[in-house]
Image 1 (tube, rainbow, N blue to C red):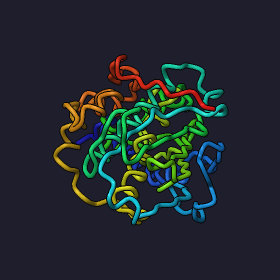
Image 2: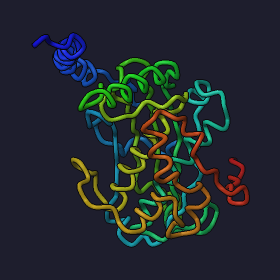
Image 3: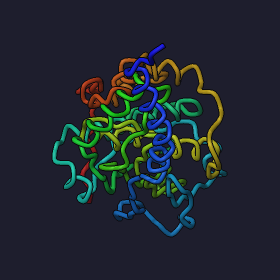
Length: 295
């Protein structure tokens, strides 16, 4: 019986791909964007911060657990962009989207422990954040990576990881101050996207948008625990977090100032590389905080 040339060729190609996949994964594992820790001068003090820690996420942190214990109410001032970060991302809408994503994730996470109130209202603790640097995502390479990853996912048991080229990154600093203005917690944080954990999205802020919630997760964990987080957070998300992730109404109305989560539609869009601008829900204009003039 004569062998089918198509089946024979396909078999050879499959073997070649199976041999190439480990190399692709190895290259992806080594591929990540490097973002240094950066101080912009907006924290009330940097002297409390500890030594740099972390591998994927690098950070210097400080937390006064005893002072945080009696805290009941928390307000979040909208995240601002430092000059260096703003100069890299020209679109005000893109900058606002990253800020909202960071603040929304922070607000929802902190709702597990604190009562969240609107910025400008009286609160036991106020959080101020600044995006100090951004490495823009290369939109062209993100599109190519999406095609390769999704395409091989249909043809093979497992898709090829994101190409380790054109990856973005984010650097943030934040502090929590009490009513007297005393710093009770602070963090200088930076992280670059990597090929294995961050889906490519065809947007200049595609990676920064996703990494914003990573920062919020680490900072909120520290505030809630009253100590620096160690290792991965393996706890199950609360009911209110799941509801918010699905795009539902947040536990506290103050969180609506930062818009609603895109939910399952956003997750599908991220999987196929769609820009976050397509699914991001803008905050209500009436909820926008107007900071007081600085002396």
